[in-house]
Image 1 (tube, helix red, strand yellow):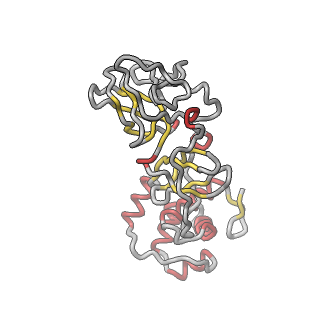
Image 2 (cartoon, rainbow, N blue to C red):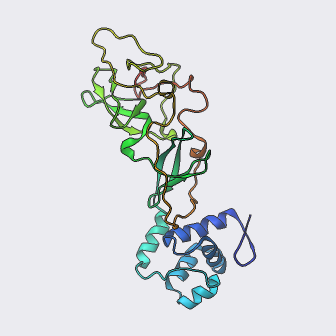
Image 3 (cartoon, rainbow, N blue to C red):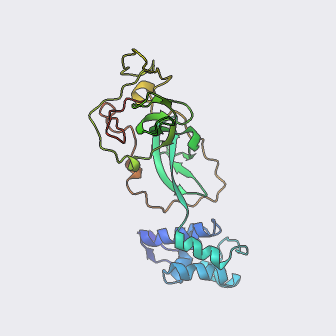
Length: 269
């Protein structure tokens, strides 16, 4: 339980609703001010937003105790209603701390894609999608086969198991998207740096690089940039479900299996 601005106790659910108010108004209220407004409006989100949008400035100042805030003049009722109906736009993004060699996925507001490393507690911006790496989806542009394996966007190629065509990743998949049945097959590819390199013979293509963490010796291939704070970031209230504790490469690296959408063994990098 947290302490409310009016001296009362508020629950975590109340605090999440207050943070929604703060995010809806793009940080114009501090967290404490948003909590005060929410409590004054009987813990009703719609009533709180209506009051913040339509109330007289002096009324709002009285409600929050004179805290620092900005009058909202450019928003309209339709914008507020849309945001309330659709909730805050959010995305699941990848983050990587190079110093701690820590990679994680986090659900963040689309407007402010920032997350904190749980090892060093520094804030980082999301890795650009074109630089993501990890468990990748490939779709062969020759035969259309879909298969999965370790890869890096715009950096690695993996051979299609039906036609042998080298394919670039089309997407790096967050943990919850790994719905394919796991197999007991251990990763193996023809890249020179692969920790379990496959034999090279016949017309089997040689891939340039293996980005499996056992081959790379690290989890983070392309790290996030340190976040430069503007002072307006709202602490995330978005439910993380199971993403918080997920990492592609934990806890056992050796036991990671390979899979393909059609049930074939996947030895891609």
